[in-house]
Amino acid sequence: MSMRRSSVLRRPLPYREFNAVHILIGTNVIVYFFTFLAPGLVPLLAMNPLEVVDSGMVWQPFTYMFVHSTAGLGHILFNMFGLFIFGMQVERRLGSSEFLLFYLLSGLLAGIASLGVYWVTGEYYIQLLGASGAVFAVLLAFATLFPRSTIFLFGIVPIPAPVLVVGYAVLELFSSVYGRGTGVAHLTHLAGFVIAYLYFVVRLRISPIRAFLSR
Image (cartoon, rainbow, N blue to C red; front, side, top):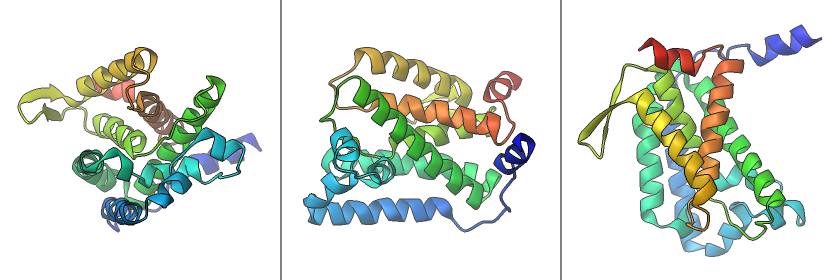
């Protein structure tokens, strides 16, 4: 039974190309448009621990990653730019079906992990929204699949992709402990990194650490 489950877990999806990144960006833009016109949709789609646990809005750990309206235009532009730049390359390597599974599962599990921590620490009134957790997972995927790539920070400073990912991970770990109250979901970002790492190790049988060191 355990071997069968393992084979299902690691069974690759057929390689297909259907522009999953474009579909995800389009979905985020459409949701942004509707929540801008109807702000009352935000409390239904963004994630709030009390709404999920007490009111039964169990869809929120999934839908939160498509909501950006209350965080301003820069939030969605930054996330969609990162998804486009790094996601396109990852999608071509993994295939659209595998990439879509990776992205949605990373965002969902990052939301669930954040929900658990918020509930345990008593942050019942926080509102989590945005695709950052899933986008950070894509960033780790890019650095794992293309460890010799160089990313120009702010368009100027050249940084090897693995170094940037490790630096971001350390920064998010530090910020999740000491940066509470800033309005930035550092915990969700860090969860995106961790879930992406586990996805590559467990499902794709690729070690990001070995990939980083192989460069």
